[in-house]
Length: 506
Picture 1 (cartoon, one colour):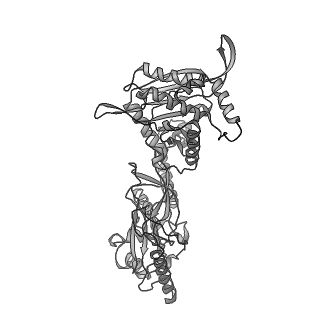
Picture 2 (cartoon, helix red, strand yellow):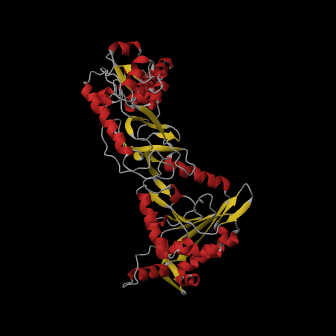
Picture 3 (tube, helix red, strand yellow):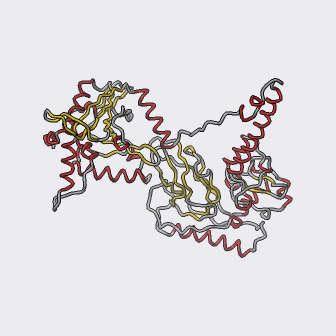
């Protein structure tokens, strides 16, 4: 008899407590190998593929795409081992034997493929991924299905919650058994117009139905073989709410004074449009939490200055126009500004720090791990260039380009999004001149860079059109005073206006 094992959402590290299901990589009935990715989830930091530590047949999935699950919640169940038991569906013995031999062969192949076996999730040596194979639901372990439908009520079966997700047709168990053990509404299996049992896909669907007093026996599922999906329950909930709202409007109209105008008694005039509610979760929720904590804990202050970036742009153009064996890859403005920041932090280490509130100490950090703000389809993320103080502009630019591409594809790991000591925010790409950046907690400062654009400027005593940029520094007033912050910002502006100043620190 197959053993049904439950795989729960593992701890993905970095203090994460929940994850949202983005895409299932397997279906019910698929054969999976040990450490094969089964689901893609989005955390507050990155999107990751979660491997399953068991090899066997997927019998159930918990949660639809878009559902947020806490760490430790069930993800799926896997039947490990060859199924056996009496055939209750009328299938021939040969088909049952074939199913058993197929599953057994898959398990044998997994064990002999050279993998490390059932190890900690995501670690160990991996065997070549087995070819996905779909097992017909009616060929899964019928003994377990029989126990969950005929021998005991669903609530008492030890594995009923797992296997109630497997499609069960009216021919799987005798009609008398279905009649004798028909569960109450919302328990997972009900009658549709009195024509036999029908499965419910997810425990979330059953819970949703219970919360809104929806009788699942009255619903006709839109899924395969009459499966009741969450969409079916949502439609039933909306219909019930509309019916209740109509009753309320009718009651209010009947209770209105006889002299009231028709417009005042009109349902359209008494019902205001509903506001849209967007849950704060995933990346958006993480950003909200971090920004709220920053403004709550850090007494920040901002100073800014306009700088003539004409010489900086000319130097960049000369660097990128160089040819020959010594010519390297193109250098971006952001890379040059990042190199200026590392030089400025070497002169003003007070801003490369954090505050230990419990010990009431300022902790000055030995190295610069430079974060840079990147806007993606998933929201604002801050990848970190490690040991930026040891890199030149070319190396920093290459690392920024690599991390930006990972951010756009949603493949940044949590480690690549944490551990920053100072952040550079180039909001000029959005066409704005200035801003007051919010510090990326627990850092002590952030430099904001506006757009570089032609403006009238006094240059060498004459009015001229120059490339001007506004630089804004937001800093934690606990780590330094305005003199230090002003000195840092002035040094950055001097390097922008006269790049030769930077040569002194190279």
